[in-house]
Each structure stands twice: as structure tokens, then as C-alpha cells.
Image (cartoon, rainbow, N blue to C red):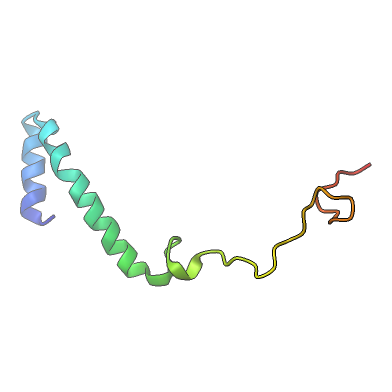
Length: 75
């Protein structure tokens, strides 16, 4: 969205035709989001580098008496 687009939106709002503005904004927001994602690189939360890696060996079932004491409450 360039300055000409912004001026057009200001004029539409001033004339009370704000409904036409909503047609333009979703595409603008999506473009802004894509720009920010590119700027952030791998700092972005959903980047492939930030996914939680699965364990090679799964944890034991915690409900068994022989299992871990992590979920047992205080007695």
C-alpha cells in the first residue's frame, strides 16, 4: 500500500464511506505480515527451526505405579 492508496482511504473515510476501506485492508495486512515474517527469519515462532523435536524414545506411561513421580500429588 503506497501513499496514494493511503490518501484514497483517508478521503473515503472523510466522506463517510468507510465500508469501502474494509475491502482493501485484508490484502494489505497479509502483505505486511509476510514482510515481517521475512524480516524475522528464523526468529518467527512458526519457523521450521523452532518446532519441538520429538523424542527418539517415548516417555514411560505416567499412570503406572512403576512410572515417574512427576504427576503424583503431595500426600
